[in-house]
Every structure is written in C-alpha cells, then in structure tokens.
Image (cartoon, rainbow, N blue to C red; front, side, top):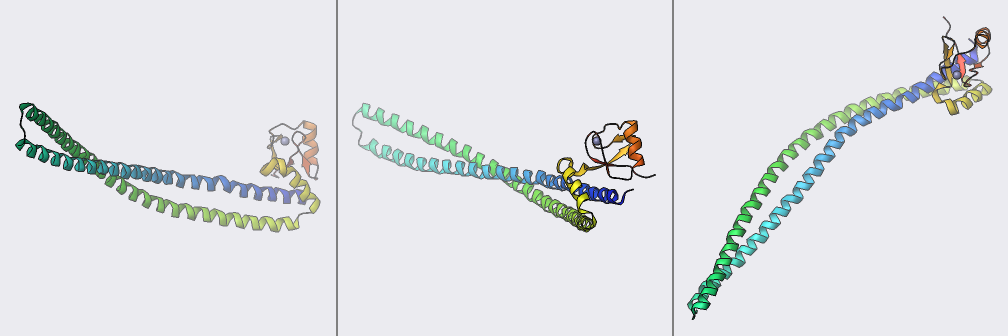
Length: 235
Ligand SMILES: [Zn+2]
C-alpha cells in the first residue's frame, strides 16, 4: 500500500476511535440520569407532602381557635339564661346554643379528619424518605462506577489523540490537507475500504474498469461516486 495512504488509513481509524467514545460516554451519563430523575421525582413528592401536611396542620389550628371561640360563646349563652325574661328570648337563646353546639361538633369532626390526613401523610413521608435514602445510595454507587468508566474512556481517548498528533507530524502536508477536506463532510468515514468491489462509504459498486485501475494503482484513489479516499486491505 502507498505509504501516504497507509498513514491516512491509520489517521482515519484514530479519528473513528475518538468519535466512537462520544456515544459510549453519553450512554454512561444517560444511565446515571435515569437514577437522578428518580431522586428528583422523590424529592418533588416529599416537598409536596410537606406542603400538604403544613396545610392540614394550619387548618387544624384554625379549627382549634374556632372551638375556643365557640366555647366562649356557649359560656356567654349559659350566663344569659339567668337574665332571660320572655319565652321568645329563651327560645332564641336555645337556638343560638344549638347552632353553637352543632358548630362545635362539626369543628371536632374536622379536627379528627385533619389529624387523620396529617398522620397518613406523615407515614407516607417517612416511607418516601426511606426510599429516597436507598435511591441516593444507589445513585452514589452508580455515579462512582460511571465516573470510573468515563475516566477510562477519557484516558483511552487522550492516548489515541496523542498517537494521532504524533502521526500527523509525519504526514505530508498536502496529503493531510486532502484528507482534512474530505473529512469536513465525510467525518470519520473519509477513508473507507473497498469490499466486494463496492465503496464502504457510499455503498456504490465500482465499475470493472475503475476497479481494475484502482487495484493496479499505488496512488491515493477516491471513490468515483462519493469522493472518499478508498483502499483495499491486502490479503
Ligand atoms: Zn463512495
């Protein structure tokens, strides 16, 4: 194989390897993101429960105050009974007392209901906190593993980049410029193999004549269909 071409095959393989790390790194980060999403969703649920528990407790405080007011009112009504003169007044007072007592019953029921809500939500909150703690531990474990894998990719990538730089130093400037031009649109498929008489960049078949010329030539050849640099692995 033409020495310049051999260098370009090598260079293209380095570029391919470097680019190949990106989806692998993304896959690792995506893995971690799934777990982080679960943590976020648990935190949001916990936050919502805190708000709801607070709401129940505030409503309970209001009911407690209302109960106090009602007990003063009932006391007042009781003292008023002593000064009642007419039956009409007595009936009005009775009615007032009944209403106040109904309100007391209602407030008491409401307090029981609100306490039940608060305690069931508090139990739910405890469960979620436990779940969150487990999930956070998992995230830590996965993050450590992901970081380790990504670090190994970065190291491998850096090694290849170093080899690539060393190779570039040795490549003829004209040949390199030619490669870079094709690479601008073909990316990591700037240099492709010819297999079964077809270009592995555009998958088009070379005519018998072009193929014969390609096999016979020791120059750098390009695919007549797509313009990529083509080469054949020597058997
Ligand atoms: Zn082609």
